[in-house]
Length: 389
Image (cartoon, rainbow, N blue to C red):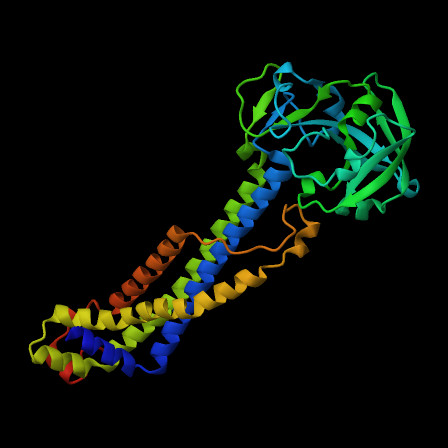
């Protein structure tokens, strides 16, 4: 009986009910979309970092800091024998040195990064280097990322002077030829980086068998002379950024939820004010005050339940369409975010249920709050429309 009365009264609200349901459903859809898009962005960016640079962690020379290039020359060591028996799909040897390019008579400081050509752990498009002979000729073959190529104004086939300092401290120089310009989704391995064969970089710097770090597929235990840096540590800057983005998304959701709650609160308060005579009549006919409160609360709660149904009807086709087109993030090419391809939604059932549950619970709360004092109304005054002034 109470449910039927509540549903009839809810329909009688007309446009107000439609607006409350529509606004709440759109807020619910927007919240799920924002969180799922952030999940997809996080999954793709972390995947790109792992596949191009981080792997399962790094065994690095202690004290090495990528932000202090003046110290790179002193932070190398010979490859420990522990890694010699590891297959190519479980390790990637990397040597980092400081260098300078001179494109068009300009000085361009760069990071010379040599990587083992036999490695299969990192997904890097360096096939043109693999085809080069292991011996160093008069011209050193190098590969640049697209961002590095654009900033240095170098393209495939260009010759440029490359200088570096060898292990003995002597400055040397040779011509370097750009054999390829490749798309790299991770700016860590693109901007300011010149890729060489590891054997070439070792030879020109007189550092046979030396490495700066070894990328591995997982933690292999302690190794003398090297410290292990975990995946979380190597990606801490990106994880912190994503954590802040998630917090900001939730703050925005809370703001939208409060705005929708205010709308329902106003509707409920107006209902109580305009329907005093109806409330007095129900009490005079013997309806307990608590049941009257439940009746009005149920009317307000129907907006939340209707919003969930409408969100399903509108959200499912919208999300299905979005998964076919994705979200273009090519505008991030100028940032340090390791994503260049399209982003797709990553739905997490627990997150959706929590968002929906909190939204419905909040709407029920704001539907009950304005009518909680109905039980205190004087039926005689309510019948005359003077219980609330």
